[in-house]
Image (cartoon, rainbow over all chains, first blue to last red; front, side):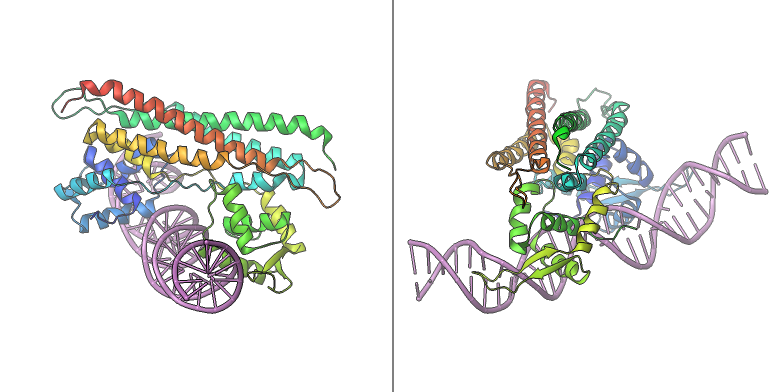
Length: 188
Length: 188
DNA sequence: GGAGCCATGTAAGTAGTTACATGATTGA
DNA sequence: TCAATCATGTAACTACTTACATGGCTCC
């Protein structure tokens, strides 16, 4: 039987499996790597750390004494085993929540201008996301034996972000062109 | 000030703005058109209809008497105005929840097999979604004056689904190839 | 010595899912 | 007549967000 954690809990466990980190560091690395596909808010992060601790999946490393008292956490043996179980279990079924697209479905009852506004809003949002992605160079992890270890994850996820965002921007451009070229015959 | 409804509430309002429908019919059309990007569960749908009714945004049409007693709902004037307000308001910021991708970030600590399993799981899921989309031919709405009215929405959203799904499948293929070609030098 | 960030945490609320219940109706 | 689907609804729960609170540190 697989332990029952929230996806965010598993995500935190995942980051701790790579190295010891404080909550704040998890927040940073999560934003950098999976920010686009899995946001973590503070109100989730810190309580989850406490829960994972109580479940014996993570344990504190030392006591906070460095600059800006950060509590560093480390995966326990149980935590590692649980994480591996989750990684091999079937993923939750595909589901999205995309309010902007729902609006696009209904917007043309207001005329082509409203629809174009929504398409351009979408294009702006995804262009911004692309800018953010562009600056990130995914890091490979170097293991503790001093060898280079090929780590696919960060590169794959980064490439996924680019692929996805580019596809959406391309669709926006085609949609805008198509609406504009038809709108001269729009019935007012 | 824009009225405060859940996105699902607005979606329901949107479908009723096109024509009168029962809850069950909303469920069907929603699944067909925005199912990929905005799922609606029964436990949301029916209570939301009651709330929209109490807010005066929709009203019952007749009393259930046809085959399989369906309560049909229609948009009120207030409902139409509220919907238009929502359509013009800025959309919620872009956000995703994609568990499978999070796993892909961490999976290679189990070796290339586990990572390939996840990539193939993703490919299967999106291929199934593509199959489902392929059978749908988006319908244009015919207005009550008997004229053909070009309605972009359904076609655009349908095309979006195809574009998105294809981009993901393409990424899966590239990722699988890349992992397989590197895995012969994998360190056990 | 004050502005502003660092780091953690809490409380209240929201949106949604799953699982179940019900009773009617249709089709083999 | 019995299974399946139709159509609506409810209850319990889960995950997550937002907004706020706190106190320390840093830098000019």
